[in-house]
Amino acid sequence: MPPSWKQITAQLDALYEFDREPVREDKLQKGWEFAGLFAGEHIAGTEFVIGAMFVLHGVSARDVLLGLLLGNVLAVLSWTFICAPIAVRTRLTLYWYLRKIGGPGLTAIYNIANAMLYCILAGAMISVSATAIGLAFDVPTPELSAKLPSSLGWVVITLVAGGVVTTVAILGFEKLAKFSSVCSPWMVLIFLAGALAVFPELGTYHSLADLRQIAESKIWTGTLPAEAAAKGLDKLGFWHMVFFAWFCNLAMNVDLSDMAIFRYARNHWYGLYTAFGIFPGHYMAWLASGVMVAAVGLKMSPGQMAMNAAGLAGAIAVLIAGWTTANPTMYRAGLAFQSITPNWPRWKVTLAAGIATTLFSCFPFFFMRLLDFVAIYGLLLMPIGAVVFAEHWLFPRLNLEQYRVERLQQLFNWPALLTWALTLAACYFMPFHLFFRWLPGYFIALILYLALSFAWQKAGTRTAAVNAGATK
Amino acid sequence: MNWRRHWVNLASILAVLSLALCLAAPILCFAHAIDKRTYIICLDFATLAWFLSAPFWLTPGLFGKKFEEAAAKAWLRVKSASN
Image (tube, rainbow over all chains, first blue to last red; front, top):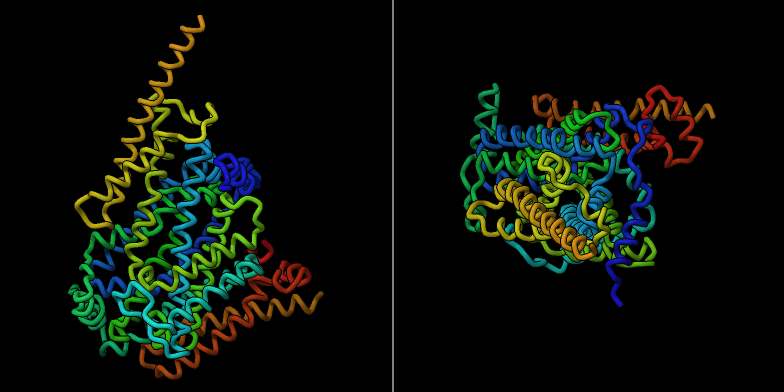
């Protein structure tokens, strides 16, 4: 018999019980600890794919350099002025704050949706690792337009890689998590090293002007490569870069997942510390992987790119980058899935998440279309970020009652659920590029939630007045 | 134990040096001072040195409680090591 909503929410509450209470003053962390935490947080195997994809999408050098710069600044500001202020005021994780606002039912749906997305993301990371293993066994990386597994060899490699990641996640997640912290400083340097070392292969240079000329003519040319155009890839420009860099961590900043981290911050300015992770990971590493893919003749294979640029160390970096980031992602997915599998032991849930992740990793569609997937990931969860923002900041200013669902002990916040569904429907029909839809969608979600909450609260007040009159 | 602290000290120095080599080798290659083959040998060597030394410095807890205590008194202490 499937578990009831009550069972699901009780199970979820039990899982997150340890961080139910707001963080106490004496537990707040220093700024440099945030800097250290973020420094290693944004370098993953997927950076090898994202930066290379920009080159394949025909971005120009000016657009990629300035667009990513502006987009990353906006991302850091989103952490500082959207996520951190709410976290510092409430000292709660998003899970518990959303539970107050959306009710346990909505929180459970949010968690399950998030878990599914985590599995796909972890699957893409395993696919990236598989491109490095494939080099050793002469298994080619699937074509740019491939949706289904391209060869038996690819399937075997992804299944084995997924199996190993799952087994390690079951046997010792915490030890691997510690080990992955060892990899971060080295990994940043491998990206930088790879880009610097292959630059001489792209042309001769004696001055900054020569370097600029190579960048504009050999790497970020501003024209869609013929193969990419034939495969149906669209050309990306300045605003695509701005929006991509801004929304690629939308789940963490605007959608407020990083409240879990910032509830330990002394003030909201600690959001600026995310720059320590964002600029090495989402600026330097993306530019570096662009240089690396240009050096292998625009062949989209992270393993081959890294092997060419940094030898065995590069191949190991691809393998480890995919592995160490897939591991916590799978763990988080398992944690969320645990809510719908009452009484399952931890290993069984991780195994289920691992099987789903491994199956996703067989399909090259997810990693070859990583840019679109990242956009969809942020977009799907974005309305919930808007709901929490509206309830936290706008409700008191508009004299709307905050945390009404919690007071009435309801399972669902219907205005929030409707806002989520209607906003996504509106985003689906928007007549512009996928990358740009989240921003108007965010404002639609804010307005919708305010309007629906106003109507809901007014209807509730009227019903209460009628009931009170009937009692008299 | 004293030898553990010395071990962590040695590991931290080796780890920092290996990172320096990871940075220096590509810069020299970029400047045409060394060829790509030499650069890759340097990078592989630095990677090996990093993974042999850095865990003792950054995550001594992986090697037991005594290593963790020793690391807390090492020259280059890393707070996250004990977390």
